[in-house]
Image (cartoon, rainbow, N blue to C red; front, top):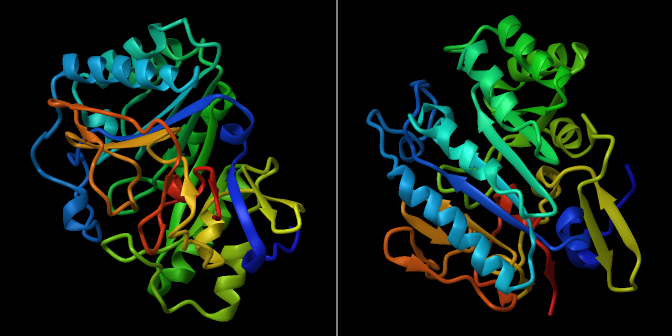
Length: 319
């Protein structure tokens, strides 16, 4: 991995967003999850389904695309998470609706899931999404509920069908040895694992407690073949990083005052609320029920720290 002078970087962004008229949506459908992990943050889950009506979700997809096209973004990437997105009773129908739009020249789908549905569900998902230009999954392994062997088998089967799969492993400092050894077992089976630093419950900063060796592992190990992020320094020299998660490992996540495309080339949805990004502390763009308005131009960042990897890879330029 090349050495990047982070203190001299003046612009960065996800390569696909820099090189294409691609609009990115990160959508937390709800906090409901079929797992009840003891370590899950209280705000990240609920015992009762908290999803909106399918008709509202369909309208939201249409409205995002309409406004994005007004800003000359004609390609779309939607990423669904939760909670557990597959626990939404109408999730299959929602994906069918998204995939039925053949107008975009490029359309891709991502989801973060615990892979708990059975093979019948996944076979239908594979059939529904087969015509998309790209399908990817972030698989979340939870040892309290999932079997390691079966979980790995599902990952490999999806990969066999052309789905890009990575296992996201949040490396809790106190449980480093257990998590790291399990990650190596998945890697030995040919499954990519992203080792992520743990953030605090408010997703405002990376927790302390990592040794110097562990920090080095977070910065350099489990490198992906295709770089995802492009960075440029003040002299115009270009650098590449394989994954946005490493920005937190290097502590490069403070962009207050930079011009950012969040809200203009991307948005996030959490429950009923539409925002520029997860980390942003400014006012929401609106709601699903009452309406929302995307920005017409990039806007200055007003937030101290950008910890979410979904946020810090959004194209941005230092002013």
